[in-house]
Length: 183
Image 1 (tube, rainbow, N blue to C red):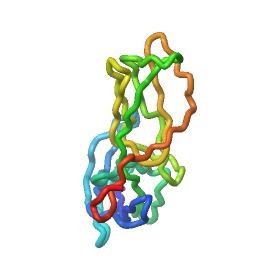
Image 2 (image 1 turned 135 degrees about the vertical axis):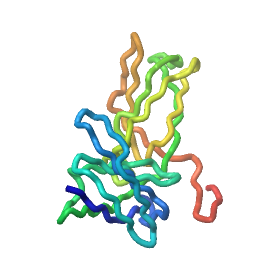
Image 3 (image 1 turned 180 degrees about the vertical axis):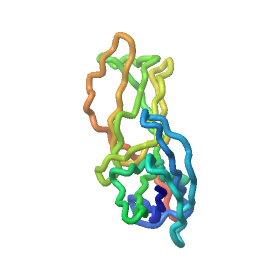
């Protein structure tokens, strides 16, 4: 059968409604591959509707925020209707340097976001886990990471990650105020 989705999208830090947030419905093949099924816009003035097939996930996104996945297991479904009140975290670009145990920068190291958590401490599931590779100076840059905290994994031939369980705070150095200024 088909489902109707209703709800509101909020900024996790302020609790304010995010106008113009997008909800993308994807259907799955059961093997981890997902494809676009049917889009809808959620507006501050009121929710829109979107129909979805039973094997689905919802991806909520908005400009300036990290996209977030909501799967059927955490959604409440009543009489073919899904209530989705989603919270999004502002997105941050994470930059860093990967070094060896003697602080020497390492090139060609694969860096992956292993897990992200929002500022509420809850898991923040992204549509895809971002990954990148370090340059000749050991530097990397990764976009679309939610404000909160995260685990990163690093791998490279001949190397083993020392701090596998280190939790890193993900915050922006530059905060844009509602007035448009920076602080």
